[in-house]
Amino acid sequence: MLAAGEGRRFGGPKAPHIVDGERLVDRAVRLLREAGCDPVVVVLGAWVGEVPDAEVVVNDGWAEGMGSSLRTGLGALTDHADVDRALVVLVDLVGLTTPAAQRVLESGSDLAAAAYDGRRGHPVLLARTRWADAIAVAHGDRGARDLLASTDVDLVEVGDVATDDDLDVAP
Image (cartoon, rainbow, N blue to C red; front, side):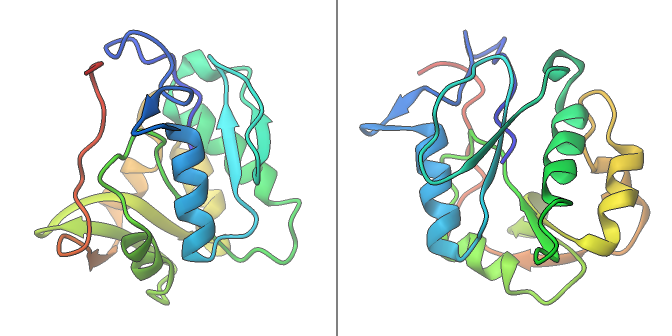
């Protein structure tokens, strides 16, 4: 889970922000666990705190953008020899649901992305065989966008069980 940003437009880091009585970071960890993700790696940076039920890694280069957080997260997962896929999720996806994450995770693809009425979104599934490619293109705020644009990506429709709503500005 990418949760290292400073949330400039939001007014501060989003990870500790409380929505419906739950921190965004805790909500995302819970959804990922319910979907079957293990381990759950959370990349923090602008805000660093304890995150129960997750492996926290700190991206000291968080100010560079999402790309450095993706590299940090995938780098942490390489230490887990039994992990063959990564489900990349952004901390502020308030419309994400467990069934949507499960559907993408269970797609069987080596490169997949959630689709909302045909529009590509998050989460994104990267097989271990794609991690080096994702790391190579993850710079600035681009994350794996260039990889997803340059190759066939299996779109997994989840618009019937989730929305692509996120938090860009504070409510």
